[in-house]
Image (cartoon, rainbow, N blue to C red; front, top):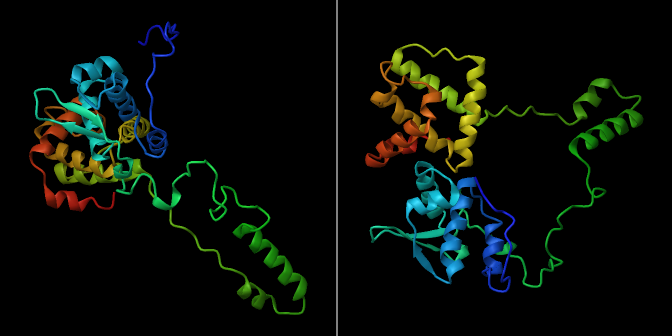
Length: 283
């Protein structure tokens, strides 16, 4: 529990530290999970807050400062390192952390630069006239639905003596967009495939399980894991002894527990299967 939020600042002239504008702007444009954001601020406080470029920070310090369990803190710190927001020096007994001040090196999950070169905010905060405005004038363009209705109305008014079939043929054809599977549907579909391969029959899934699994999956996605990473860990769980019926059983609920999820990460990090990695490009 966070205590004493209403802090009385005895010396407001010194009880703060400065952050570069470029850093704040870059931070607003990078996607970080809840855990990543909280851990990042700990690093900022421990370094810049004490006028340091870097500092030794133990996992225990991260736990006390954020309340995040170390089993969740560790992968979140690795995510920050993958995004090149922080730099970790592992030469000592305790890791040394620093903020990567070259914000142009920060990357999104897709591998794109955090701030596109053609979209940098000018120093004077004025948008150049050549830039596309934030909101287009709604009178300059109509939606596809409006265009279709107006076109149909005009055709009917001007072609009263023309065969109706020719009118139908002249109207725009609407194409149906295929329904895209949501992440949970994709994962459950793959879970069924693994389950059938392991036990020669599909699992029995109750309606309540969908809601529970959806919340668990959402939590992992918010922590910064991609659907591809989760699917690979699920396959690792399917091949492990932990998924045997005499132990935990091959259940998605058990898989999403911190104990199993973190253990599968440890197993995967010891033996990286390159062929398996490539199999999940669709995720």
